[in-house]
Length: 221
Image 1 (cartoon, rainbow, N blue to C red):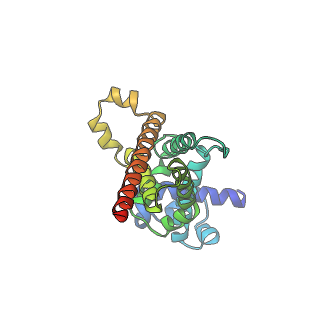
Image 2 (cartoon, one colour):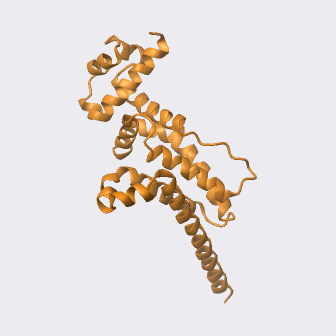
């Protein structure tokens, strides 16, 4: 196998095993065996087990992004339309079933119990995506809301999406199977979440405008 092939095989094998067992229980020997690689390969390509874990987590995120890439959006596209595209892409990545199951299991495990891998994910992927979302929300609100209100809207949006993945078993217990199959597919969830956030944006702007108007009246008095 070529150099890149061996590295990718190690990442895939490590991702599967780390997703199954977690960092502590997984062994380098088992990972190398599954990858069909020499035991020394981990040190050669990654330095140690911890770095292999970090790279496996980042590899899982890259694969999800490749399976559901964010489409290019022109600057003249309405902000509401860009929001729906962004939400649909994120829902398909997090809730969709494309790709190997270990990818999402590993990412959710890392998000629920963050390590250095999560810190690198935030810097390399989550922060740019979140900033892109904030830019859309800021445009939707006409640049009227302070940063913390925009961030809270953004976290509310992401939280809704993550809930359907992290608590999918609970959703399955609460919703009848026929309703689950009929109304809870990724694109349907994306439409629902987009509508909720667009409604919240309108409410936030209205509330914030009233608060500022009241404050101005009070100051004048």
